[in-house]
Image 1 (cartoon, rainbow, N blue to C red):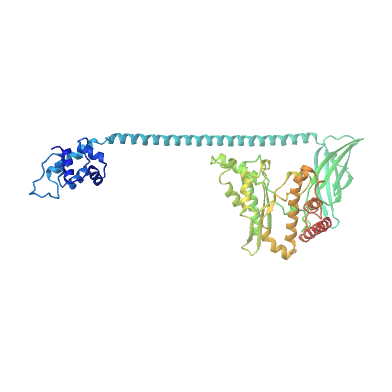
Image 2 (cartoon, rainbow, N blue to C red):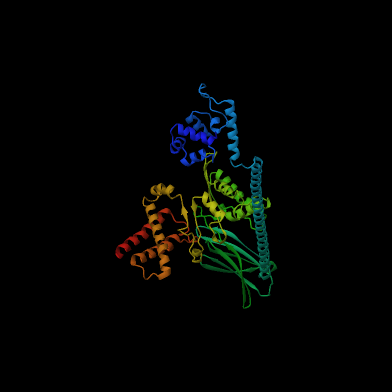
Length: 525
């Protein structure tokens, strides 16, 4: 009997329909119909389920063995023949499944993909390496061009100075000249200067006059002719911050004058002596060796620390740290170090911090106290405050004075702009101002700053539409701000009363200005 007929026979013996048998097996009626018509073969799990439902063996269902005798009850385990039959069915089922790609082929495809990824990584690495080399070559070329430009500029400046010296010597009226301070009378506020000139070309009948200009006054003394047709004289005039001595050579109606010497000596207000008596200058020009320019700033700071250890309070003015940083850049380029922003060395920030950190108050080993105050001048090209030297300097200092060229052109000195400048010591010094000056000092200072800020905002409107359209209270702000700028901020360093202003006087000046503003505001309202 065929397997299809055996499935139909057992189904009918149990009284099951095709739908009922399909529900027990989890298949459709059409699947049962195909099995009974020998159109398809049930799956392995379905055959095993059918054998359990019909209580027969799988081999009997497939037609490979006869039904077991009634005397032998069915066993729970498969016989060897049944196991072989199941193995044959499994082999047929596996043969009917779609074949997978060979393992060797899959390995080959994986190796090819890995090789492609590795090649891409190597290509990208080579590309970035070439870009780094191109960038480094460009930076090296740029720094070389900058070095050549600096060298050319320094050589041009040196040649220009030599040409000017030659022209001055050729056009000079005198072959020799000298002027020196003979004596100074501080009580009478006078100074005596001895001057001597020797004409380059002496003409018979030539005479000489010496002119001293000091403090807005002029003093003239005739010269006495001596050996080798040299003229000498002693001139006494008023002692001031700026003294000019001139010699006039007279030949008939012709008069030729030449400035011999300028004495720009500032007087120390504490001692009454020239300020140069306690000033040390260390000069390094741009045409000097780069190592000397780089070391000059440390030389000055070491001298300041020497006097600090002796118990003095020392102020050091470094003009300018930008030129010192350029010397560092030249040294770094010659040492072939990796450059940073704008060609400056990567350690520029640490060098600047190490320089400014040497300032401060010190308790010396000899029991005295000394201090070093550092004022570093930064001169960025084109006034660009975003360049590295300015930015790194502002990181380490707490006080910044921003010079403004528009104030300098307007003859407003000191040309320190009050809005770009700042100080972080204000809150630290507030208790000192309260105890030693006035308890209202900080309030007056803050009100002055508010007025100056308001003036800056109003000036933008004035530039567009003029000041006539402004209301009276805003016109008053502009006028009071002008009083602050001209009467309080502007100073004359060569005037005896305006050179140094005590804190008490500053406080009274601010109170007067704010009193004027308050009274005028009340009248406007």
